[in-house]
Amino acid sequence: MSRTPSIAEIGAFLGHLKATRTNDTDTGPLLAEKADLLERIAEANPDDRDAAQVAREARTAADRAQRNRR
Image (cartoon, rainbow, N blue to C red):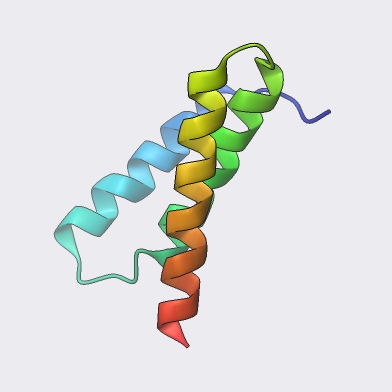
């Protein structure tokens, strides 16, 4: 089982998110980072079906963005 994301990891993600708002940056890596964090949160809360659903949707979006970059 993976560990829950730390506050520092979530803060780093938010910093990356802010950086993409001001630059014309490929958001694919950001979507993958978001999906990773949400999957870890869902794994740490196995009874939270909403968290699992949000994580699945985030992974789908990240995978779609990766396919579209090719």
